[in-house]
Length: 187
Image 1 (cartoon, rainbow, N blue to C red):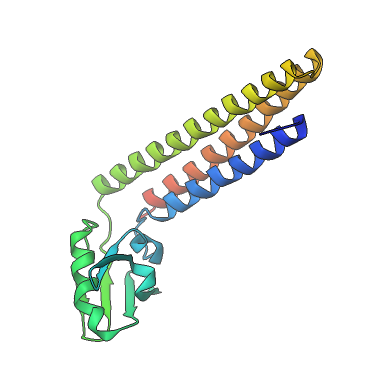
Image 2: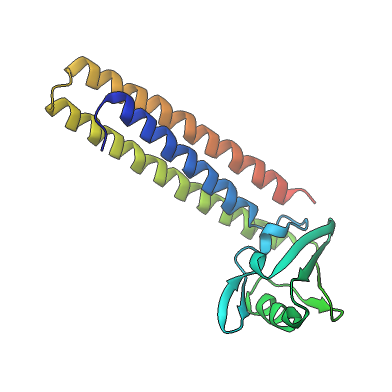
């Protein structure tokens, strides 16, 4: 709970930074035609009956722009990793040599690129909705402070500062969105 206007701004700024970090993380999971080990972050491998994130059962690297190399910590996990990749519906066809798993990243079609841009825009809009919700929470905290003795002018200045901060972060989301769209559409 915020006790002062400064607390409201600190809490808001912290939440906005987390929102931007989350947006970056979501964008990094989208395949933009280049091999990115983060693409497999959401793949869950059956590790002795427990669904486990890929990063906890293997080392994932990108030796070149069109290949992902997965080195399991345990050799016996190769088959489970292959199955998890196939079941993840990412559209990859893993190849195994018994010790590791390779994924050749196909070049994206124009249609698939457009679908990915739609996903980027959807995620960006979700981020903006989160930012607007944070604005609403901050303004409600300011109103609560006003009932607790904050002057009308200070409350108005506080709401103006909140709006400026919100505008800054929405501009950041727009910037990273256009960067990601450009990356996806570049052949």
